[in-house]
Length: 449
Ligand code: UDX
Image: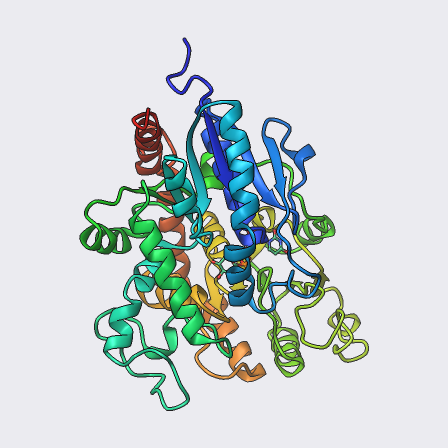
């Protein structure tokens, strides 16, 4: 029987950063599995590799970024450049695609807020993909209120421990700001994203209802006319494709030699950076913990260093194989490995969700924005991890690892993580919340006709 989608075409427009483009490509696969045809419009900066996705059509647009601009170091500046420099090339590309064949709708990353008015000018429905968590998005929607009540902007005079009583259990230090960035520009960006989502034809989240019930309720109360689609975790709902990054497969053979539930997997995602002093405290904390560890040190992770230069001479050799460091790991495979007992993470949304899906307890070291909210939720709401509260220091690292790996509290955290994993797995199966919601999304798209 012919599927109701009959190969109708969707145009997807991802933000060209790993934490955004990967989930968008997974979303594309999910929709392809429902027999939609997929076109991906992408910038030249960080363009995806079409040969890894031969079933999609790719259209490149010039982004006009100079070499210095094309960097996630100042993320707010980069996002603002995208929203000005991509407007005309995106319009032209869309116009040409629409002249070739009918398109059911545009699915745009929420960061590209300019796409709302472009879509309206073509009378093309626009659904937004918000790559972060619903919980954090619900905080962004409160930004004007938080400013009115004096919580924002966060300044040196703000009391970091003060409770934000409108959004429990957040404190001022958990608000999703970007330290050292222009808070006014960040505020403006968030307000624009939220306004353009409110004007859209619906918003998709890579999450599942059981995990973010509270965030979903908040959004539905605030925006009763907005249709919200929690249809994740994508990587559990659709088979994995080959990864575009070069993962170091030595991770898996090394993990194969370790005891079950013993290894601390350490990774801080694709953008976050730390100082040399922090890097050394982490190294000594891990070294002194007596626990085996697998650590992803991305080139560029440590300010002012290429890779491992700040490590004391002989550091790894002295651990007699207890530590393994790589530049990039096959993270989902690592988290699913039986030897991994904890994930020390920066709490980017993808990493947090991947950890939830494998029932791996977390140690949280958030760096900026949504990561701050998520770390608080992991430790105090879902209670599936512990958060470092103070300046990163080797003694506290050792103590936190011990608590999680050896003490009663750690055992309880592990039990809760396993229970949540079950729920993450059930939601994608027939009858599960995400499975049903995906059917709802398909119907919604078909109703645009
Ligand atoms: C960025 C923002 O920092 C984050 O707050 C937002 O939620 C998404 O975008 P990022 O640093 O990219 O996050 O982290 P995350 O969202 O966790 O995504 C990282 C992805 O890279 C994950 O899917 C992870 O599996 C993958 N990864 C990371 C690897 O496959 N191997 C690695 O070695 C490290």
